Amino acid sequence: MKNIIIVDDNLYYQEKIKQVVQDVFAGIACPCQIESFDRDCSLLRDRIMDPSIDNKIYFIDIDLTDEEDECSAMTLANEIRKYDVDSTMYIMTNHLVKEQEILQELLSVSFIQKNESYEKHLIEELQQYLYWQYGIDQESQSENKKRVLKFEHKGNYYRIPFSDILKIDTIKGHHQIKLTTRYSEIIIPMTLREMKERLPSQFVYCHRCCIINVELIVVFHPTKRYIQLEQGVEIEAVSANRISDIIEQYELFHSQD
Image (tube, rainbow, N blue to C red; front, side, top):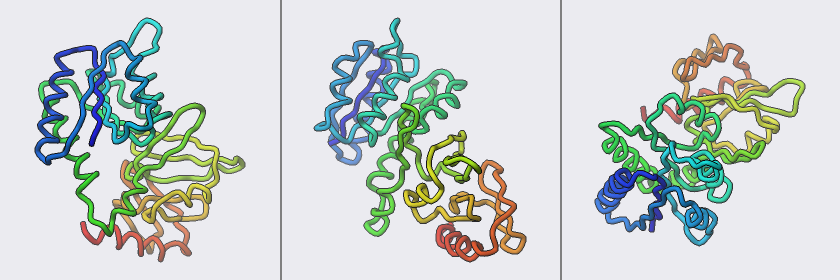
């Protein structure tokens, strides 16, 4: 049973989202329970903090707000990440300029633009979610259980897909690392070795102070010891001792391309 929670003070969008969700889940005979909330968030908070209600998918309007900011979209998103870290969250927005800011804060949501094609986008996102949940074979299931990096830092709760992480670097002279994703950079009080223990196998050392995601390599010159990742991120000092490990994982993860 999937528990769908829609938070939008516009009844039109509440009904539209509800109808799309019902149609998509009915198509695979997956039962779901749908609840809608507006600015009155007291019952919503009960749902967020109720551990007996699992498998939750949230749809939250970014413009949801009130005078005391007790039920703003950002406040709710942070509470969800605190009490319901494994849930899936979609932000419904009319403001593309806000996307980067929110991604830097949470790095754990997908955005659905409220425009003339938003229903199509919503269907595509839900279909991708269902493939992500059910379209994996038994051999890959154990690896996919580790598909998200979760941690708390300075009161913010992060849930970052491994597929969005480009590289992780040590910050010299500090007990810190810098996490570089497709969208932003985050400084975390942790050692590179501690982080490596939490990462799946597509993450390998390119030298002792840097770990890269081999799935996101777009250019690899072993003889030149040069790597370019997505977003134009370059690694120009690959350790000769690490080349064989990188080649092995690179060939493994790109063999099905």
